Amino acid sequence: MENEDLVNHPAHYTQSGVECIDAIRASLGFDGFIAYCRGNIQKYLWRSDHKEGGTKRLQDMKKAAWYLNRAIEELERAG
Image (tube, rainbow, N blue to C red; front, side):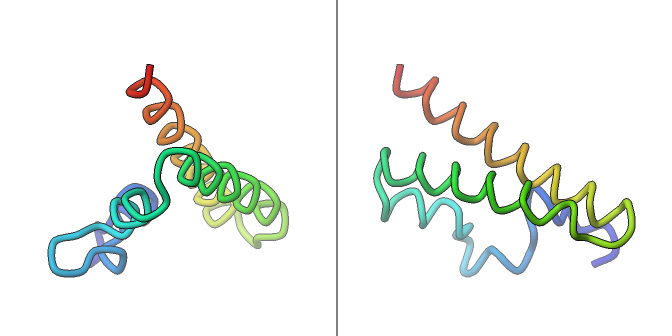
């Protein structure tokens, strides 16, 4: 899987047609999911400075941005 998108849709996070993030959202509810996103944003920003090489560091920054954007989408949908 040389062209796999490791930030937005990693193949190892999808099982039987269900993406893990969607299952987490369903199980945590709105407030729990927003908290989960915030925790992941903090995690990826925290560890990005400790990655060797610009590519791995950039990937963590993109993952933090992905979770921020997902939380924003959830908030916008909720109105």
